[in-house]
Structure formats: structure tokens, C-alpha cells
Length: 241
Image 1 (tube, helix red, strand yellow):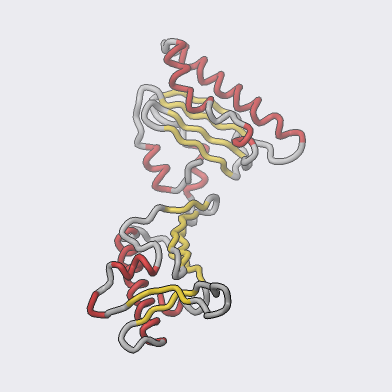
Image 2 (spheres, rainbow, N blue to C red; image 1 turned 180 degrees about the vertical axis):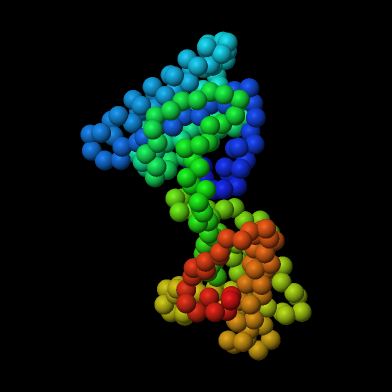
């Protein structure tokens, strides 16, 4: 499923092709009425195929174009629905969105995507980012009022251990996993140490790690105005900030 935000709508609005298919249908979320969901879906897809044939497309070409839509029709797909389903398909693009909007049933085949049913989402999509931060993992999530998805990070260390591989060698920092002797392995907590060891070196190591994370995020989010929310254990967040 795709994430729908303002920039995504802008991209869709600029799509121009001889064949742009827009399908909207309401979805039932509970009870026996949910059995209507695949029926409505198939009716909408069938209507799209009929419109393609009426425009002069061959039956074979129409079936091939609609194949990605037909592949949505699985048990797993119908288990994760919201109030409405929007499908946008062209030879160059395929997007579908499960949204909390009970769309009127509609199938449109023209040279551009029919986006009017989605315009109500333009009144601020509430986009935000969540940085989930720990010594062992860094994850970034992008969210709107309707969806949250994980974003693949580049040029950002995925853990403190990875960050130390590229750290300044003059800091002479080392990293190992500590375990209490005689305890059968301990809890595997991370220890930073250098000349003299101790809490100062631990904090310096974290600062270096977080500095690399921050630099990578600034590059990744350089044109973003959406807020960034920090999520992690209490003692790490003040160091990062």
C-alpha cells in the first residue's frame, strides 16, 4: 500500500498518458457487509475494462494493463481495509490507497488521473517524522494523519557500533559488549571506552554516534518542513538533542 501525502498527489496530478484509470469504492470494515468489498472491487475493475474496450483498446491489452489491479484480489488484501479504496493506474504508474474516506463508487478512464475525491486530503496532511533511536538501531518513520511507514535511510549509521567504524581515530574509542562475570552472559549492554575509560568516554562515543545520525538526517530531510519526533529511552534523548 502506498503512502498518500501532498507531494504524492502533486506527482499524480502531473501524470499525463493516453490511459489513466481512476477507481474509487467504499469499503466495509466490520460484519457480514465486508463480503461486499471484493464484489464492489470486481465491478469497478470490470467497468474500467469496458471503458478501455470502448476506447478501442484490444481485450488482451486491457487485461494486461489491469493485471496489477487484479493481483490485489487476495484474502490478505481484504483483511486490511479502511473506509475507502482508491486505485490509480496507468502504463507508467500503479498506486492504491486504503483511506478513511467512504468514496462514492466511481470509475474514470481519461488521459489524466481523476483526483477530485482525494482533494479533501489537501487541507494539511499532517505529515511528520519519527526517529526511533537506540544504541543498537536507528529507524525513521514518515507519517500522515492516515498512514505511517518506515523510510529507508542512507548515509546514516544504523547503530553505534557501525558509527564507531567511521569515527575519528584520534578519539581512540573502542566498543564492546559487556557481560557480568559469572552471570551466564549478562545483558549484553554497550560499553564505550578509550584512554582512561569511564562515563565520559561513554558519553563522547554517544555524542559522536548521534552527530553522525544528525548529519545524515539533515541531508535526508534538507527540504522538509515537517516536524521530527524523537522516540527512545529517556537517558539517550537529552544527549541527542
